[in-house]
Length: 122
Image 1 (cartoon, rainbow, N blue to C red):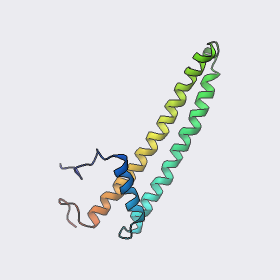
Image 2: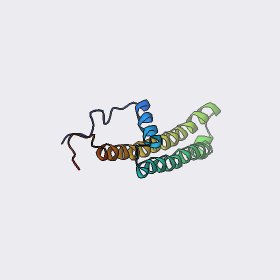
Image 3: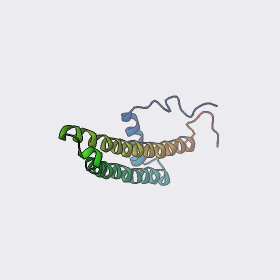
Image 4: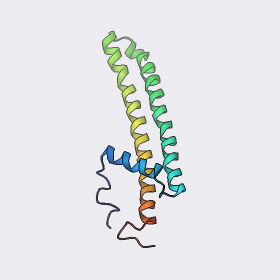
């Protein structure tokens, strides 16, 4: 089965941003597709915020964990930063996957709607 586009999985962040802005602000894009992009951005922000909050809480909780509490300060601080980084990375990557997954689906619908895909006919 042929993929939807030649650069389906290798787009850079700049190209993704251009596509996202095009689908949001261009007057040729149907309102439902633009609304999908807006809702993807709003829903992905929840994961970014959750990652930020969980990173602070996870670090604070791990910093006061009884086994870690017996370590010297620098080791304790380093050990407490690991779960914070993991929660932060989880929030950012989940938000990006959600955002790009929805934006890419909207982009596919837009391309099919305007007849720009050579294998799909409406």
